[in-house]
Amino acid sequence: MKNFALTVACPSTRGVVAAIANYLADNACNITDSAQFDDKETGNFFMRVSFESDDAVDLDRLADGFAATAKPFEMTYDFHDQTEKMKVVIMVSRFGHCLNDLLYRWRIGALPIDIVAVVSNHMDYQKVVVNNDIPFHCIKVTPENKVEAEARIMAVVEDAGAELIVLARYMQILSDEMCQKMSGRIINIHHSFLPSFKGANPYKQAFQRGVKLIGATSHYVTADLDEGPIIEQDIVRVTHAQSANDYVSLGRDVESQVLARAIHAHIHRRVFLNGNKTVVFPASPGSYASERMG
Image 1 (cartoon, rainbow, N blue to C red):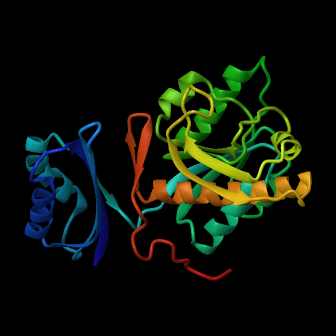
Image 2: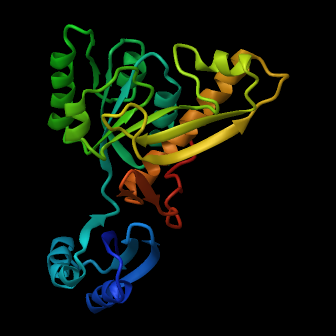
């Protein structure tokens, strides 16, 4: 059996779900998981369907044939082979907690991606990356060479055929041009505090203000710094008895978890852009299972 997914976005109207289900049934496909959301505020409808078919069913033919079903509903849609791993470029600077976490999840199969390259503006993680048989590219970034450096980064992405860029604590601001070119295909992670603290050491500021919750936010990158559509968030509680260094350690841990969950949602086509927000459907059964334990 083959495992596929269909993602659909269209104006909300009667009969969409029935039309999708009937088309799949008529083409010898069996729905194994389905999620949908009707946004009353925007009038948009979103749906993700996992389904199985026998080996005789061709995905391209299935997609081409769906056009007649989609047209009356003005559907935007894609069919995906769920066995194909998305090609990903990871970018990192000098904080390695997210990179190391992603490499471990990738290595055991808990995060089924194809890491085609790691890009950094420092050499700190060259050895760990190369030891995992992943190409490492050190591209220094300065105010004087920023345009040239970004062109080199995009060359790495395009030459590797990457579909997604992950900023695993990459501490350089991307240009508006790169953000637009890769719109919906760059995921970032950063701390989340209430009240908000910015600058070189936000955890120290949070400690000094007696913050009781440390959080992390993962989002799509846009030209507006740290204001792109949010994919995933989480928090961890801290107390007056913990030190500033405790804040840092706990913060790094929640950042790693949130980034991994955001990537997991994206690669399984569970995230839909809905204006400045996202619709994120629950994971299908079995999608968190690892290929091996360690």
